[in-house]
Image (cartoon, rainbow, N blue to C red):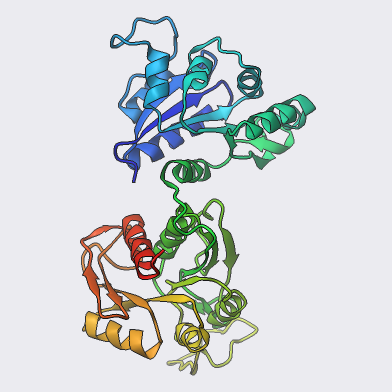
Length: 397
């Protein structure tokens, strides 16, 4: 996603420096060229060699060190940046930036950059809540600087409160929005469903399927990157909630049906969840004990959520998924007609690199107007981007 993009990561002196190594790694995996600037105090917590090994680039620590090439280094880094992140951002560096102080490599470089600047504060709760710190943050926001608010919890100092560096995943997702974000779907509302449903047999056991929710989450993130307001209804419980997206967690197909029906006033619906077709006719309130011989469990049909949406939709653009093991295209085309879809994403879950828990997918996009687009094997994030592209094109946005 970030091939050809440069991310400059400023790392300041705080106990959360170790998390900056993960931020570096995640941007590198997305294809970005990551340049790291460390303050003197940051190097007391984690050695620059760590960031050099992860980024595959020299780490800048000293403004007056011999340059690796002949240029004014802080200016060249400032110009190269497509995104400038400071994480962790201490109260000290936030105060210096707001005051216009440029007395080391990091503050001089951020002063010179025209790239969007994203700060992720991390400090003691009392320092964060200090009126001076809050004034500095407010002033910088008014000047166009971006922030990822710190999380709450136990801090390294033993205090409990707000001040912990936000999860690296969320910092990276916010950064992605600043680099890749567009306004193609600005003003549009998108509803996405993801993951499996669980149908209780008793308080211990349930019926489910192999869906991981990765595809639906990727679609929700892509819609958000294009400027949409996104609601994600998720049966998946172990995936990190995407930044800036409302997530509604559900268990059963009935719960997902109710949640979906309450959020139909949207422009686009992408039904990526793998909803159970059946549930036990009667769930036991107590654990079912093992008995001699076999056991039969009567099942009853769940509501077909996608079909129900297709019957009541008005102007919404509706996308469904067809996870098939045979006659993939034929079955997907039948499903598209039966459920009144505008587009269906068909995939053979038996194909190598595809399937529920894989990080890649191999799909064919089938359109109501008869169009068909077979995609090569690619990551689910790339598939999600192609799906959003197709929706935008169909809707003439």
